[in-house]
Image 1: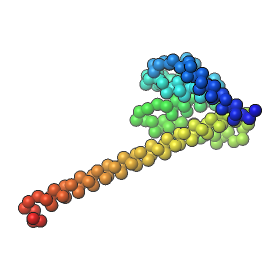
Image 2: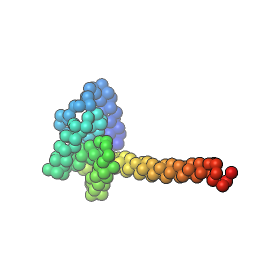
Image 3: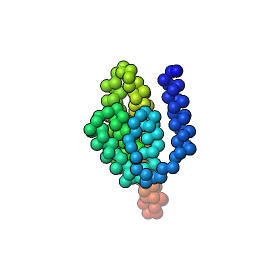
Image 4: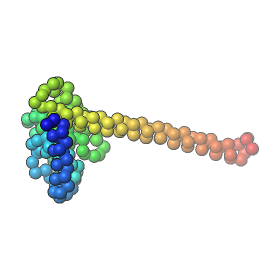
Length: 170
């Protein structure tokens, strides 16, 4: 059976089993790091449900694990965590995640034994880059909106001066 078909069946099974057994709360900490590609896919959903304190604890543990082992699994775990947190430093975390994923994809080459992880890394990298592109567009739109608002206020001020009696225009 083709590996892509196998992954689709596995993902569908994972989603179905996750719906039936999902009982984590926002304050649940991770019991153990993911050990397989399938567990990494489920890990993303579990991380998204963490509260801030447990997220930071998990992020620190993932950083330490990656620093110790540098394994593909620990790299993917850290990348997933970096892409899930919120806050003011989200763009920096997404860039850090992009660096982790990009270096893995670039160094992987044609490695057959790690093909599934390579596909997973490319998928995460695409999601990451798309998020960053959207964030940059949002920032640009906010700046443009602010400029337009400033110009509108200036025009209102000019209109008020023109409409004010005794200014020489009436």
